[in-house]
Length: 445
Image (cartoon, rainbow, N blue to C red; front, top):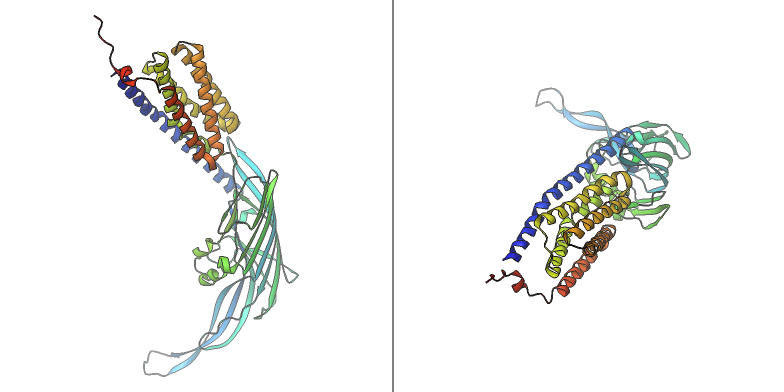
């Protein structure tokens, strides 16, 4: 059957065109990786993403412990008391931590790629209660010989200013935390000998730079973080979302409030200790990410996923014109139209890197609509037919743009679009006798 052979040829061309589309998809992935490498390079030259651990109190407990030990190698010799001095390090979570911060952002470019840098200016207050250390067997005496304020960070290079006070007295910050699982951060010795039950009030002013993401580990019985920034596209993530938030065209404001009943962070801290790793604590982080409102590579990748639908709809429209108007379209014509449709996505990617996604989409779509409309007006034997298909193609590009912009409603819009196309096809072809159309012409007598 001629009709069957034509449909098989069109199907084969669509499968053939999937090859350049797959290559384009790989090109998008390659450019995405390159953009990620540039962001990493910029972060390496300034400061990486920052994860701040709420202030901790690090205590050193010195004990004199008496143990009965056998002296010498004679197993029959009686045991004698031997005194040892042991030092234990304790990490104490704050009773309350209050963070009041502002966030300023800037965009740094390198070639075609850019990264978002932020600077947080934070006022951090914390209240600690010195605990009574546990008593060990054979303990003769115990004293707290050192107390230090500790703040864990993601990257120390981001510190631009830091002042710390404890009970109104200025402290001298030092690099390092003395905690194995906090390789980055600062500490400050608290003068005077701490006594069990004493209350230590600390206040710190921290200016911190980072790249793309800011997070806090809410290690406190009561944790509160208030943040106001100038980036209008924040993404809130992590263990808990803000209890209050407002996103405006000129920025955002948000507030997190967490108790130990919800986060269980102090309990997880107690299970870790200063020398061991503490993976369970990472799961309690609350974070903010500075999103790109229009990720050109993500949008182009999503557009390519609709390429097969585009090919099917445009080829179907041309095929219907063949059937309804008696036009003759060679498979080579279908191939050239398909290549023009595939070239749209390459134009979109190339232009988006220079002009932004919206303008690039309009230019690439306009160029392909004009080219395909002009070409089909000659193939189909009339400017009106070419113009009609150009209008249809323009509607499809407009619908695709709407799908890309409305990710939450993409499924609904796509379903309505496909139903509309199917309904129009059924209405236009309801009187066609497909059996007679597909049969061979009778022989000439």
